[in-house]
Amino acid sequence: MRRTLASKVNAILLGAPGGGKGTISKYLQRDYAFTHLSTGDMLRAHIRDETSIGKEVKGIMASGGLVSDALVLDMIAEEVKGKKNILFDGFPRTLEQAKALKDIVDIDMVVELKVPHQTIADRISNRWVHAPSGRVYSYDFNPPKVEGFDDETSEPLSQREDDKPEVVLNRLGKYEETTSALTEFYGSLGVLRSFAGTESKVIYADIIEQLDEELKKR
Ligand code: AMP
Image (cartoon, rainbow, N blue to C red; front, top):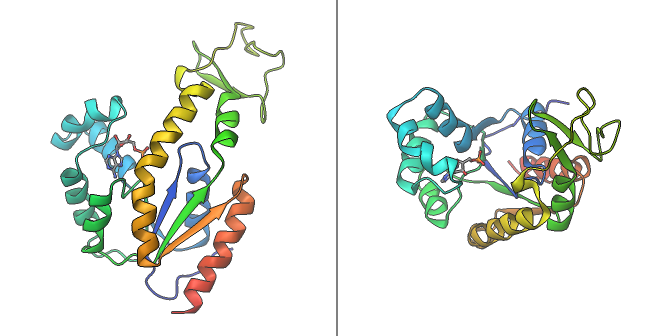
C-alpha cells in the first residue's frame, strides 16, 4: 500500500513511550516515502561508533536525561541537508528545539498519538522477563506456558523495575509535562493533528485519512 508523497511533506511523530510510536513509525515508512530521522537512533549510533559525541552523551542517555539542545540541533541541521519528506521521531523534545527547527525546515503536520496512560501502564506491566536469558513474555500476546515461569528453564520470571505500573505512570506524567509545551506550540501554528485510541492499527487508519487529505491540498 505504498503512497507517494506528491510534494514535500515534513512531519513530526509525537507519542508517549510504550504508546505504539514505533509501530506507527514503521507503518508510515512502509506506506509513504518518508525519510525517518530519529535522534535517539543517531545518538545510539554515535555511542556505538565511539565518536566524541557518543562519549559526551553516553552517561546522559544511560541515566534517562535529555542531551543538550545545542548538540541535538547541530546534529539535526547536518542531517536534514538535502532531504525531503522527513519524519522526525523523538525530536523535538523541548520547546527550544521546536523553535529552532522552525528555522531549519517547514513542518507540515505533527502527528500526536494519544493513548490513555492506564492502557500503556497495563500493557507494559504485563511484560515479564526471564532475566538470565533475556526472554520476554507478554501475558497478553505470548504468555509463558506456566504463569510466572520461563518455558525453557522453568525458572521464575521477574518484572523490570521500570516496567512496574507506578514507575510507568510516573514516566508518562513526566512525558506529558514536557510534551504539552510542544503540542501548544504546534497547535498555535495550526499543524497539530491528534489521534486518540488504544490500538495502533485503528489509530493508523485515522492517520492515513488525515495525511492523504493533507497531501491532496498540495
Ligand atoms: P529515544 O530513542 O527517542 O527514546 O531517545 C533515547 C535517549 O536519547 C533519550 O532518553 C535522550 O537521552 C536522548 N535523546 C533522543 N532524542 C533527544 C532529543 N531530541 N533531545 C534530547 N535528548 C534526546
